[in-house]
Image (cartoon, rainbow, N blue to C red):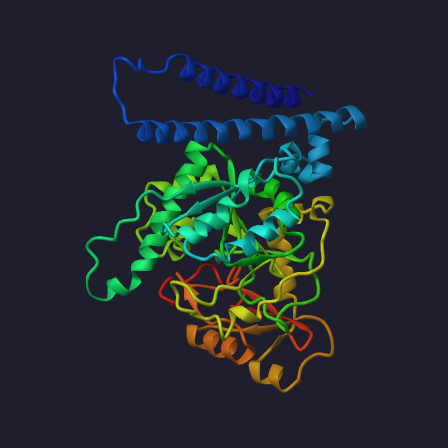
Length: 445
């Protein structure tokens, strides 16, 4: 019982100390008459400090809830803490998502430029969102295209329109870089709009969509349900609606099936202000999505992605000139069945729960060669594992089975712990490295 009291005292003192620090910082703020600062710089510095304090308070809250959980078990069983931990080593674990707001406000940030077909996406967003309070829609327009602006403004107060003020050309581009000018403008637009949404409009969580996306009927349900995980699991940095290998025939008819992924999927994705504060100071001049996939940004963290995509692009024509569209993107299967995700316990996706089950599933599956798989010389039922050990071996197998075969900073699309999962002729396949795998090789491209 003494040990329990010690734990509880430590938790309470930690919480009180950090609360005192927070109060001190707000009471003893700098005299604005004495010092002159640029508003944006001060705002960012305060956000960084606020982020650190919020994370500490969150940790303290989890500690206190854990201690209360143990106390309830002591009162209920009459046993001391040593016996409880001996009988149940996981007693100190806790469903951290229980303390998170289940009715969050998530800003939908729609990026638009010069496509009047933004109407198609806006109509779907308004049709499927459960209510405007929880999912306010902000449209950020670049390009200064008047017909597109008129379409957006036709929705009146159903959406908030913000317009990128810097429509200037990108200076200093020479040689081959000139043909990628569009990517520089997109990255500039993203950086500006995210700063506006997080720091000026002051939203805490943003769901990013683009003007050429169709969305599934349960698009909002999916993100609302996964919000608590994003807020509580420090090993996550995004929730995505997209499966890069989500083509018909490569996915099972399991719309409730979700995964962790080391590969940033994009195409309908959610991030928090905490993550943006990390990204904003080094936001790249171009190719922002590949930049997010680099180890220095990912920091070993993952995203959640679905088996069946909740978004699908219809934008064949754009800055990428239809790259991958005809061969791949137009065949992505968009989910059509609504799943009540908010009524499902999704804590299996927390890293400490997920990794054990994932490794067991993958490496508990019988291993076959690509030739055996193609020749149907395989076990009669259950999942199957195909092993790769080299970049060339992975690419060969991926191409043969209809997967996207590229890497970004050594990570294959949809990969988790090096494993890519998909369906082949109705069977669950794990394209996996050897069990001895430890980390990605960033030279694989």
